Structure formats: structure tokens, C-alpha cells
Image 1 (cartoon, rainbow, N blue to C red):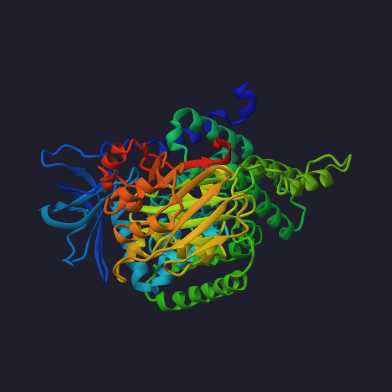
Image 2 (cartoon, rainbow, N blue to C red):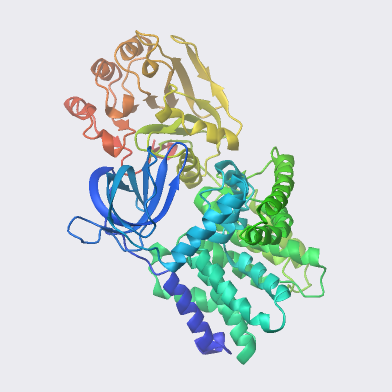
Length: 640
């Protein structure tokens, strides 16, 4: 059966798929540190960067004082320091001291100090990558050098965060990642440039490009696909794209554990599969085939992106072909910048391309649906929409029973399909910080959005949106801040880039009842401490009710502010109390407990907050306590 499916190039397909799988083989991390700890270790230097405000380096081959490996040799350590010492020699072994942490994906060493243990030389491929990096930084302006390094070396860290965010908003991140599209372009360019005996240099140059890009899984998958196609065309019959796709997909699934099959893996195969199946006939106009390819690639990735982050990126359908036309010029410019003497000319050329891109982004900056947040729609409807949208434009769909029109109508209906949800309340797991969402029938309210441990983008795209999607809640349209400290508000500016938010403010010592939050009844209380300059005691708290359920949500208030709330809040019992200051405040808390008589308590706390000072007090009053340490805390009207 498998031979029939993969025929006629079974051996080559298996060889290619095995190569892909080996590139994805996981390297288990043996060291996991959720909190920074002082350490002393040795490692080999891979990169060294001196900037205005800090020095940072990348290391591998980490060992402890006894010479035992702390992690697989290929694991990379990012070391950061405020000082700017003289750069050591690349490839040398250094003794490092600092605060080491590991977040489950990568190592980081803060405030590091170093001394040279052993001179060394960087491996040839590493020396080549560093040479290319330094040449690009010298020849091009910072912005263009960052984009060139992304295209040649697969490094996006030098691309400005604003530009990366713009590409992400419009669904164009694939243009910055070295993938199959880039290798297809390199292959086509080299076929046209290298003629006669020089044609034999095409594959070696592609191999060099793969190693320059770090030989990652996505890079090697694209390289193997090009190599297999050429070998099969030379010695056998051409291999069908769907056969290669199926063989690589099957063997990667069989050879690798589920943990290594992350979102990038799924998106790559889904988009490629739709592209192969939805390819139009060669006689069609080029612009029609281009739009069709962009459309089906969008549909292939749409359900998985929505399932992860609750967004759809429709602008990629139009922008991918337009900006994709500029990609070959960027690739050629990045390569020509390596030639001495051409830097100023190439930099001006690349700046012109960036100017065109910037104008296009400015025109679309205020466009709706960039991205389109659809957390209130079930991912099952989005998956059905992807299938219907694909069939509506599928070239081989039978022309009978108005099937295309039916599929188009089904596609539109999926975005209007009923997705029931229940009013609810969630406190998100943001570590030391606070982020609460209260969802009603038509809208949602955000009470703070901040963390002392998570970046703003993670707060919004990796925590808030997935939580909304899980319960099919709409994105917040209103915001109440408990106070202005960073660990309560650092995610708000990023959220405002995505949404139009009305901020609710109530003067101190007054209250306001919010409307249009049915079935919730929400009262916002303005707070004030004994000292006007104590930010924790200012701001707001919420008293929320739904039928017989009542909850009081506090910020970081303590002392005088809590005693004042005892005089202002209606007495308990209340079903739920969000304890103040992440469970770290007991001043004035006992009197509030006696006044409200909560049946249970929640705390938004991180690992560094434990043991919580409020725990013994709550235990004394026999009030059970739950924290966000292991996940979100959720209540819905179904629980009532």
C-alpha cells in the first residue's frame, strides 16, 4: 500500500524524509532552572556583540567545574552583561559566572563575568557565519543589515521589534524566515545566472546557503526537497510534490515524539500541502496563479494559527504576492553586500525597497482585520471554513450542482456560525502580576494586564488570546487598571495596538456602576491610601455580581486602603475574593476578611512569591486558597 502511494521514487523519498527527520531530532535539555541561580561554568564562545548599553555573547558546549556537560553540546547559552569588555577570540573556552536561568526553551546568563580558559578556533561554518554577519553590519545600515542577516543567516534578532510586529500583524513573517520559498527563489535565480559548466555550482551554492542559515529543520527540509527533485529528474521520473510531502510528513511523525512537532512544523506542512493540491494549470495567467497560491497557503495555515492564538491574517493573501516580488531583490542585495566596494550602492538600493514596504504598511496601518481577532469563533468553524474556501477555488472540483457557489456560501457561513459561550471570569497565569478578564454576553472587560516576568507580546498573544479562545469570549473592549505599576500594566500598550480600549477611571473615594456588561453587575471603586504617593493603594477595585454570585477583585491595596474599603463595600459573605498584592499583603487584610467573609480566595502569584504571607491568615479563617502558579483560575455561569 505504501509502495503504491509513494511510487515511483520510494527509495529517494525515504532518504529525503529520513534526512528531514534527522534535522528535527530533539536534543533533550538536562538542566531546567525556572529562577536565576548563581553558577560557575565553562563554555565555548560562538558570537560576541558589544552594544552601547550592554555586551552579549552566545556560547555552547556548557560544562560544570567537574567537566560534566550541563546540557547537549549544541544547546546555546545567551550571556548578557552591562559592561563592555574587550572581545575574546571566537572558539575559545571561557569560564563564566553569573545568574543562570532556563525557561524551558533557552538558557540565559545575566550579569556574567568571564576569564579565558583556553584559546581556540571557531569551526569553519561558525567562522563563515560570523564573517558574513560582520561584513553585513559593516556594509549596510543597521536596519538593512538586520533584514539581510534574517534572509542569509536566519537570524531575526537584529530586525527591529516594530518591523517584526508589522510583519506579524499582516501575516508576513514567512518572508523573514529562511524556508522553502527562499530556496525556490535561490534555485530559480541560480538557474538563470549560472550557464554552461557553471551550472554545476548551483547545488554547492545552495548547500552553502543552507549552512549559512544555520542548517535548521525548516532550512534543511527545503534543501532536501530541491536536491531530491533534481536527482529524481536526472535519474528517474520526476517526483510528484504530493508524494514527497506525504513521505516526509509520515516519517517525521513516526520518528519524532509529539513534543518536537511544534507550530512551525505544522504550519509548514499544512501550507505546503494546500499549495501542492491547489496548484492551477500552467496556462493560467501568472497573477491568477500567484493569488491562488497565496489564497490556499493562507487557508492551509489559518485553522492552526487560530487554534493557537485566536487570530486570522487575511491581509497576507494580497500582501504576500506583492512583497514576495521584492524578496528576490532583497536576496540579491544581501548577497551583493558581501562584495567589497558595493556596500553603499547596495545599501541605497535596499533602502529603496524598504521605503516601498513602509509606504504599503502605512497605507494599511489603520486597516481593519490586521490581524482579525476572532476568539469568539470556535476553531472547528475556522477549520471547516478552510476546507470550504479551498474547495470553492479547487481547479479540479466538478462543475455540477453549483458546488463552487455552495462551498463559497459555506465559507462565509462559518464566520457567522453559532459558537455558544457562557459569561465568566478568568485570572490569567502571568507569574508576579495581574491579568483578569470578565466576559459578558456582548463584550469583555480587562482588569489589569501586566507581569513582572512575561514580555508584553507573550501576555497578549500567548496568554490572553488563547484564554479568550478557550472559552469563546470576545476580546476586551474596556479596561480598568488597579494601579499603574509595571507588573499590572506592561501588557496594556501592546494590547492597545491590537484593540480599541475604553479605559474606565473613577475618582478616589467614589464608585461607578458599569453598563452594557450583562449579565454581570460591575461596580468600580476608586481607592486612595493614607499617603498620596503610594501607588499600590490608589487605583481601582471591582465588586462584580451575577445573580447570587459575588466576587471582589483587589489590586495591590493594603493598610489604610483596605480599612477604607471595609467602610465602603457592602458586607459579605462573598463567593470569591482576589487577594491583594499577589498574596504578599497582610496589613489590613484581616479586617477585610471579617467584613466580606469570602467562601474562597484566589491569588495571582508567581514562583518567587511563595510561601504566601496570606496563606496562614486564610487558613485561620478556614478559607481555601487557589493560585495561578499552575494555570488560569476560571469561573463561569455554568458553575453557578
